[in-house]
Amino acid sequence: MSHQYPERERKRALEYYYENREKVLAQQKAKYHSDAEFRARSIEGAKRRHASKMHSDPEYRERMRQRALTLKATYGDAQSSSAKERRRLNKRKWRQANRGRDKSKIFDALGRKCSCCGESHMAFLTVDHTNGDGAEHKRKLGSRSGLGMYRDIVRQGIPKDRFRILCMNCNWATRTGKECPHQAAK
Ligand SMILES: [Zn+2]
Ligand SMILES: [Zn+2]
Image (tube, rainbow, N blue to C red; front, top):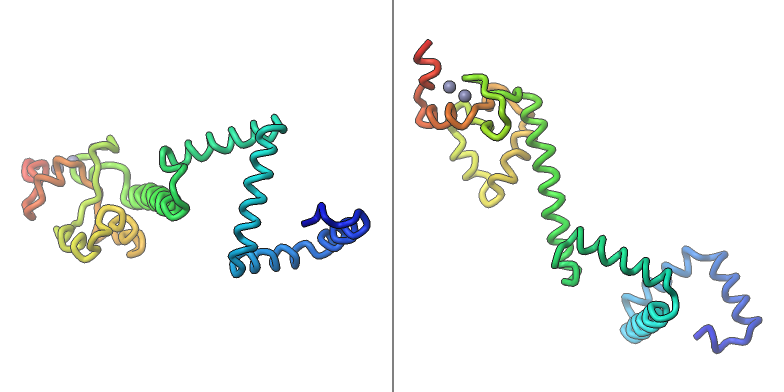
């Protein structure tokens, strides 16, 4: 490796590297993926450099400590798990973020209060299928129900003739297509 080269050769190699950085990195990346021996050597080298720096470089040690904390905050106890597992968790986070965004889009479009009684506490509110076809909608979406529901309503353009905001009480009272007692009392 580089420390085996005489000084002059080493300098020339470094110069070449800085002038053709992108190309060299792409070549190394390709080699890393296709050449198992090169890959093993690379990993060995990285491990050795990491161990030696952890031992001798307090700044590096601190940086690694911070990185471990960030990973733990992001992935919880799964931080030490496989890349595949981390991707799965990342995907879930992404879906959850989308879900929140879709939900607030729907409430912005349909109003943040019950369209029957005016209840406005978010904790009591739900998106109601005006035609009572919520169960069918859910079935069509299959296993993506819940997560997929908000996404799908946004995709449909949040049509006001199909969806409305109701509180849990009014939603429950009208679940079989009956008129809400609030309306009957008027
Ligand atoms: Zn209500
Ligand atoms: Zn009502």
